[in-house]
Image (tube, rainbow, N blue to C red; front, side, top):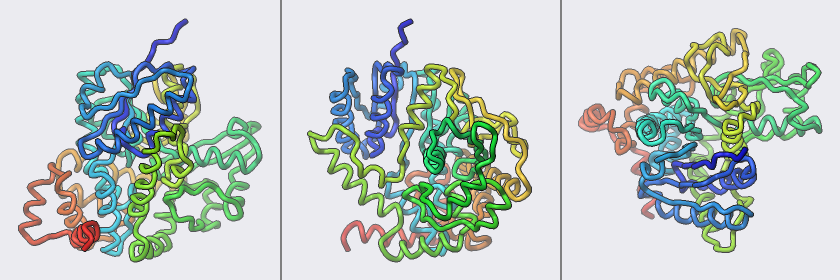
Length: 463
């Protein structure tokens, strides 16, 4: 039986990650017969989209397959009749991420892309945009699947499903893929020889491992974590967890748990970079500039090795295999953000969790986890409450809810410190926060300014 050709749209098509996405689709073309591939971006990203779009076309031209890359700034043109829509955009571009990192550090708090104050502000900027995309999809491609890679992935996925009413959505992250790959390598076996169970939230999950005979390997992996490379992503400082804690949990925490379990060490390292070579976002901006110079090479028709420095290794394996499994009803085991549906007893039935799931033609079927022990239950319930406040505040512009989210987040200091940081970030990002416009005007009238933004503007302009 001949397979139906498919149309795939990537919003944020000018991303430096796009070549990795193309690589994944090319590798799977025999299973995924792509009819149309559209890259969409905004005016500020037009030049990058044209550079990466030309490279993407060279990659397809070097393959045995005839696929045309379409480039557009008109999202609605691209979405018409789409089968799958992938999202990998950043509202405010990398300059907004630099502010998300530098401003918290200037207040003596952690600045990070998806955690703490910076992660919450990325959500504030992104949620209204993703919900507008959903409204376009309801009109132009009502049967399409939305595969979200835009961070903070779990929060964005919850906004889409619970508040946008778009049930055909799955959130993805490369972090579990790294764990699956590295832990198989530890034992000299394939991923199919191990049984992984993940549960929690995006960038805040835990997992345990057995072999196919049911023998527990979690404790052995914990031991190996202190003597072997476990594949910590390029964007996370590799400070070691406290082994006594992990031995008690008998769970392997997400790499991002360092920001919570090892907060002092991570903050110290972050502040050293803030005062020295620059935050991770500033480093990434240099890497991205180098990548796009490479992408301009008319002879380059494959993903360059330098892309692994960008921190998104295995992106294509997550995004492309998820689409492949839905399209072909492959029933692949993947770790995704999807509706809980009772899989984690300690969290609301309809909330979004990151969990081991079977990916079918009808989407993700989460595998039952059950209950967490006391410590993990306390952490995950607090973090879910914070996420819920962030989403509602992003939609309504409720300043009080934004403050509640800041006070709930373990990486933000309490009281006047939280309020001062919230206010400065609101003023700094006002261009991308129309829902907070009245409050921002009030803050500016009271003399609130973004001090670090002024410093960065001077640095950018060479003064």
